[in-house]
Image (cartoon, rainbow, N blue to C red; front, side):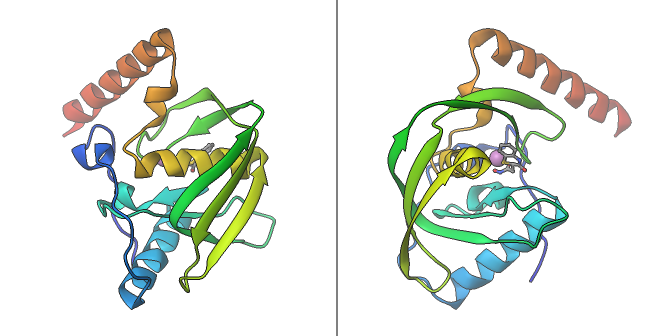
Length: 172
Ligand code: GNR
Ligand code: NI
């Protein structure tokens, strides 16, 4: 297992539409293991393969807090098959370090996917798990949290990111 580098906005790989996995084999399981290790190292509640430069429809999620036992979910070729309600959550993204914004999404989602063994499963989620599922599923379609903001918040985030970039450039 290995911690992989997490790509940051505006890396072009984050904008690509990821391709379905054709076979859940040892290579895919190695990818899943690396993604889990990278997510826990960050730490984050989820990680999608495009964030480490792999254009495949795979993500991992673990929303357990520090004082709870970890509960890793693996989603391969996921499909959100039903949504209902709305909720607003203060979201962060490992590809936008240091920024967070309130984003409105569905309250309940039903997802179908393959697990680490290639077995199909269906999961109904609400709360943070539902938010994370929608956030990670967006990554597979090249959709990022900045796309979910209204025009004003988008401008504010753009300015914040530009300022941060200038500070980093000055350091280098
Ligand atoms: O670590 C993460 N936290 C988070 C908080 C609220 C809503 C979504 C997320 S996902 C994010 C990790 C990440 O960037 N996944 O793509
Ligand atoms: Ni993200």
